[in-house]
Length: 80
Length: 411
Image (cartoon, helix red, strand yellow):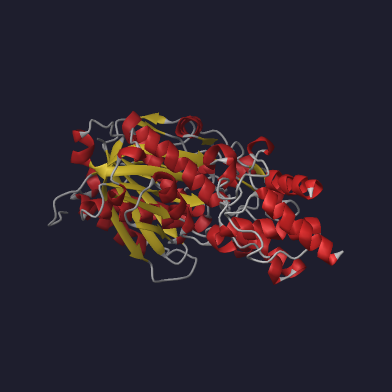
């Protein structure tokens, strides 16, 4: 989970204009001004990073980064 | 020639520029006034192509222009527009937090829109399949988005559109913006043009048409009205003007850099890409702009030419200028310095013309070493010319035979 969270923050910093020091596990995507299209883009990046398929409703704007990391981790486990 | 309407003056109260000659009006204007050689060089994205150079904006920082949370989701053409609009609004002394946004319009010109995004995502489609294509493709590509993003940045909720008349787009936009002030639909219009399409597909297309210069030296390739001109040098950039009704601008004590006092538009109805050799269509637009301003040819001191550096355009335009105005007006083409920024060109040239009127200084046409003997007009070359300019016209002619002419006057 921590590893997934760190890698997710890495994606946000590399491609989405987010600074590492402005996020925590509690920060929501809304607070980062990431709308539904931004989350589609994050889903595409996460698909490459984690090798799992991210559906439209897996990550919502109201979710926190910690919740998103958990959702991705759960998918990775179910595949593994 | 007179018109049955009262002359209508739209005050230019603010200007902003993003060009290869500089980002920011001061840097760009200083470089235009220097003349010298073209602000061109090899473009990394074009490496290996027959047409490999252009006038790229090298000192542009998208994060500074639109913020790091947005920079990644705006195409470069929208980033340019947002940056130029912010500079123009600050220059106008307008504070968007205090205005009635419903009275503020945005009219920008763009020839092609977010072409770089389209080309990149087409590669994604071919190489990785449709489910990897960006969900932001459409909002980054669509030609109207630059005006949409400018509105989002400043809360301009009035009429919002992008005009597409190829290389005349920026000029068409400014003429259209002035009409929104004249009709009363808007009190303020943010207008101009933007273009960012120096990508392999687009530049190869222009190259295959034979429209681009084939010279080896990028800085000597754009040479409007020169006997050795052989095509244009592609450029990117944006320019934005803030227009208000003159009485409104004076009432709020705004500094008026110049006025847009006439506009005319027409079509050649002749050929997709070649200009009407006699310039008959362009003449209709020019005479319409004069009539709109209630002025005649003898009133015009200066022509900011379309002057692309193509053999056909420059000759047809020079013949038109000579036929309508005689030898009198001093003519310049800033494309010698900034290249041809397509849908942004007319806006860049309108800002240059406004600054010419404000400062009484006509920038020189770069690289004009030996004027084509068939071009019998007074082209400013070498160094710029200090001259009181009361009335100037700015010509723009687009592929498709679309012509647009602005008439600007000293405030």
